[in-house]
Length: 398
Image (cartoon, rainbow, N blue to C red):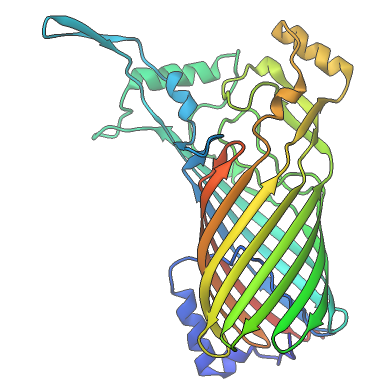
């Protein structure tokens, strides 16, 4: 971006200030799936970006792309004893149960800094603080009690039993809500730039600073993978008729091996015995993604459009760290279990659609969009709604 004065431009220009205020007061939004723009800060300038993101979901896509509430497989475990009643001379029996209701939310509050080395080359760092919350409980009746107290008690007792040693159905405690996410460092090069077209490439290294989800909590949400990723990005922007702005981002990531604590059993089964718990070698699948964001400009600085994004990831690979680990699991469970059973359901694909708006000048930028996951397959993919706000300013730091 261009030169930034000691005061942000919108502090000196009422029109810009009002435009940004109007965007802030609009309903929550999220940046386009197409991701970063191609521009970099000018040589010696520091670009500061504040980019809060909220992701929420209550349902998941299954292998066949059907939607189901989180924790649906627990319904069979929460069945109360059979209830039998005489109806019209016959005895009718049924199972009564209390559905488990789960709502997951991840809030990322990051600070991104990017320094222009030259007018085309920049280096940066992205530091996220992540708040994860799961609201889990049983369906309540009109007076606030579980619809079937016997079923709720039975399920909680089952989870606490030493066979499973799982956390009971409850929301995330305050002490487990805030963790660091995976810190990123990056380098970006703007290769081409003309009046109507720009092209840039970037290398991103994602560090293992995040917090993995707990294998002892059925609905825990991770704040990061806690393993190293190397990602390549290519972004391009094309402007047609001085009105239509086409943003395309292509990403590809190589995920480096790490370790992960898991209960060795099919991922489609929630209730796996505690005896199956082990720390495993984990080689997460590599991924690729593409995002597009056509925007219609209403003037030089303001644009509105839609977003579309597609993500695909290869299958993860799990192995025991040693032969002794495999023997220990087999001894505790009474039969050998291959760590590869965890591979199933980890090759994921999903598509998101959304809308976006942006306000950008040479020194300041604000953008908002909201996206919805509309398809998912390969495993349990959250039916997520993603809200994002981007506020960015570039200044001479010294």
